[in-house]
Length: 506
Image (cartoon, rainbow, N blue to C red; front, side, top):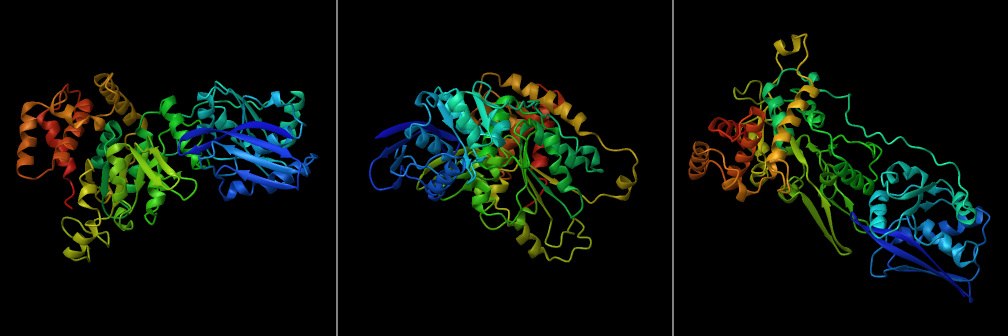
């Protein structure tokens, strides 16, 4: 009887759990048993592992093979355990020295010819392994850029099972491919200079980027709503390394590196189509719980165009993460919490035909149709929106100007300066953005000047704003004060914040 152990990682959301892969080869009728709550993809590993071993010239043990994934109570999903199972079987068959596989974590899916395919969630898996004291990991070569972010670990990136076996038996390996880990901090493809006119919308975007405030852009088609929303990340400060690793870990779980580099410091922007489902928006899944659009936009922008056209309940599913900054998904296999601290940008037409304005020019919609259309954005959701901005049609004067508008770099410099003021003010308090000021602190430590508070209390007394609305306006006023260079929000700052919050009647 032969027994061997290897180590892999099971992910439950962003939380990784070390899994011990135990293989026992005993006398008896040829059989293969896989224990430890595997899903369908993991159950199929027997055929992948057997074919890979045979096609690499190894001998499949024609005996009773038992594979146990412990802890047994933890659900395991995906094909990332293939490599660990294969190495454990070969070690139990006494073709690999057992001392070579101790304190090494194995991640990777095996193809039938022995190639090691990429798997999702490599970065959070390596984070969990490193916290448990493991400092060596064998990963697919395709995941090398992502895995290399774990600077404290020895990363052995392999493309084929034969290369792994040679390294385990002789210590020899191909020359490791060097990756230049230059963090990307800017994107030159988009710039606010491309936006013609729209001073109010540009100001609202600057305020939103500075304080992390949610924004609604409403205007006719072709006015520039999408252009403005897509350029908001270009005026946001670069992510710090810790934030970048969080974003990379979330995108790794969703296998989202086709559109985003693992070494990017640019704030992410996620733009789901308005026909998206609730699960796609907040995350979910039956076996492997994956993050949704609101988590993929963590530390960035979640842009939803044609917001009133979203199916019922999809936008309202964002109400909890807008307040908490996290999203908790409960399924039968357990509860998973993903980070979801994002800046929400909604864009909408003013009516079904899109031509409604204060003068009603060229609009063919009735007043009831207009109310019903905008009424699709629920009151509780709109109460969480800080800025509501009219985006008027671009006029001939704006289009005829030769000079371009202010660049993203110029706006970003002001945003960075204003954020530095806020970070200094909130030092040691656990938050850095004005949108994160707790309600209690707004009534005590960070209260606007007395005249401004009297104005807000009068609006609350007349039921023009809610208690949440009062706090939202106060937070926006702090952002305006930082941009204007005021030590405390003045009555003018509060009035401007109030006006921008009430810009659209819904």
